[in-house]
Amino acid sequence: MLALGLLWSKGKANQSPGRLGMIEKLASGVLRLLTPLGPRYVKPTLTQRIYLMWLFRNFPTLSPQVLSQRQQRTIERLCNQHGFISVGLQNGTADAPLLGTLERRPAVEVASDPAEKIPVSSAVRPMDGLRQRS
Image 1 (cartoon, rainbow, N blue to C red):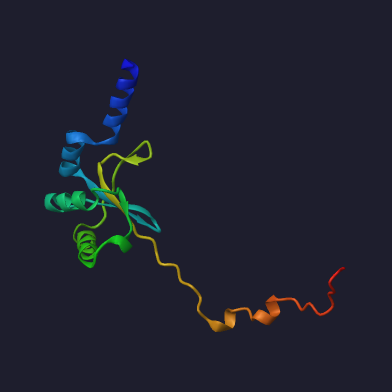
Image 2: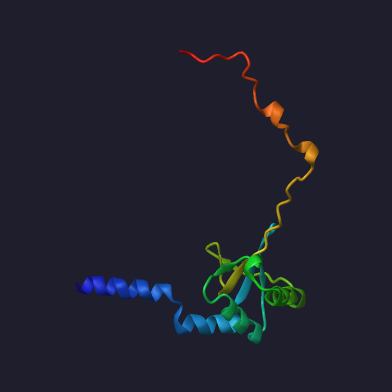
């Protein structure tokens, strides 16, 4: 019974970052942007880090579609003001604490040319020569 209690408390400690993790994020957190060229990192100011911690409070990764216009403008200003920084990698992960990840995937273009559509008559085989078996 004691072992189960210890395992539960260990698992619980790993799930939440705790005060130390929050302080690290406030002190030196970075925003990760997933781009077609790979992940890019932005180092925001303290007030911007507080805002980003609130923005990513429920989900560690967000797509631009779920952000409001104001939030999207804030992220754009953040990227334009500070530019991208290089973050040292440690075991394949960034050693700076992540405030959150923003997916910035390019929109997929769908061909809407009517000439590219296959006519229905060529997609369906004629069934003139077939008879029902009895």
